[in-house]
Image (cartoon, rainbow, N blue to C red):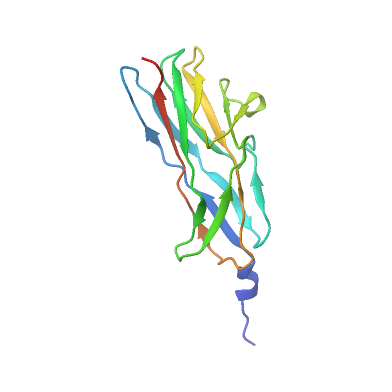
Length: 162
């Protein structure tokens, strides 16, 4: 008796958005941006949307941004439009106007939402540190190819008004 795993695998699509560490300095102050966790969708079902909220502590992307206390930084996210498979398959991504959030206390509980498609300015607290979180919705097509899908999210931080 020959067993086929193809029907089962066809319905499971694993996805991960990998988040690189990025450092960007502009002017006198040193600014560091570190990718702490990627945006994790887990197993996707073809044709079923998979939302991840920016305050989801287990699945949202998470960046740590550091600079001099009281610095004003402009945050710019380069957002992928789709997750890519090693073949030509894609899973489109959607970001809403509140798909990103930041916290000056390193907690998603008091995170303040912002639109990740628009550059955003934040004033750092006395700790010189802010956490940035990102969510999105994966939109797997009905005929998705099974396998691992990835994309790169980049957060750039630049000093404002030196």
